[in-house]
Length: 317
Length: 245
Image (cartoon, rainbow over all chains, first blue to last red; front, side, top):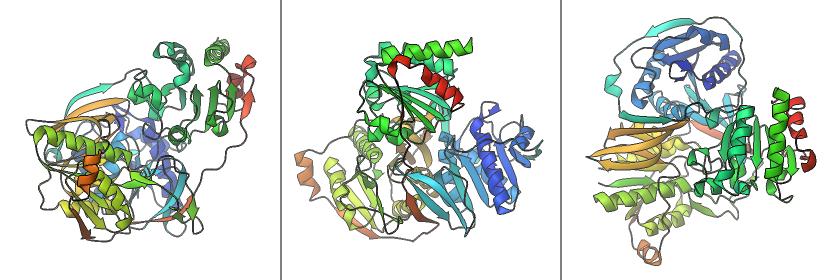
């Protein structure tokens, strides 16, 4: 059995959970077994996870859907025991980054994080992961009987395959496993989280100052894209650190990355090189980013961006 | 309050990555190794905390003798004692198990790491350590302090931040923004030579994973250049060729 952790944002399942279940189902197929999911909190929407290939969804009601590391990892461990799973899949969200290693310890598992492709099941189970901050890939074999795999968000296609899942209720007192107290959550509302965004519009020093970001926000809003920025821009406080993509910032893997006024230093490429389509707009024709780009425009952002905005508006009207 | 900081030696961020032995080994020839930048933040923050609250900062590196320049640099930055666990680690699980064995029975109130190493990018060591040593975890933090014998930290979450508190002892992993890395001064470099560096045999070996092969990303095809005077056609390409918008 392959068990997938289905993470919620409030009362709804996250898109990354559908992706992880699609991955788990395809892996279960290759292993000749079935796929189940585990959710924590209410059973709202749990049966719908069958659409992505979970046959059974274990819902642990011993805690709300608000994350707590100790209680969540214990709940997942109990679902593993109930399901008899030998392989567990996480999405590498900030929550998955904590849970995958903790669950791996509980089950004496082989652990690989940062996985970007379906596992190979010939000669044991091995997976491809990024390494050297997206400058390379490595194939890693998981040698133990129990395996924990954490996949990079936005690296696997969501597939709708089935109907409703059977919901199986789990309950136990998790409170003795609680380790941390949440004091305050500060979430950007109404904006697409950068790590989950399929489209990203990003800008750098070429914008000349924070007052010029209006057109970046406008283009992003029109496209339904998230906004990002380069390191110098976040260092100068033109934009919040949470938007900084690159080797020391956030690593993203969107379907489309539009880089405006960013030269494309190796450290920046490390954070965005996995993007499927890259568009670069820069005044300097020698900017290294053009070598990594699919589409390039050598030109001034202040002339180019209004044209892009106008064209999107035309197509939308 | 004593703090143990885990330090990893990684290739400099500008390194051109290549492989040897039929793409099964990372080619270290000519590679400049540095303190993992996130570990450097953890070390600096640990020093700031002990300067404010008392105590000592020790560091541990899991690695063979060639990592000692990185250990000396960490001592020059201000750590007072170093441990080197003498094994070429296989993966994050092995590093964490070695560090867990080292801290067993010692009174470190905090164990600090970087959020991930910039070579294997696993981000595993801090959460594994918290589980192995039954310490609470503050992962990927941008602010932290000790208040009334408790750790108060702000950690990154999807789309924002969460402020949490937990009792000590705890494990913390450092994210950019936690502090500015401290640079060693000449006095620190001189003192570092005299500071204790204890080499410890590895406690167990672990081969739960095997790194079989490496590859570089496929080279991109030629960039399609669009004249700035007709920039708007980019939108049409993205819609018609790529079906993205």
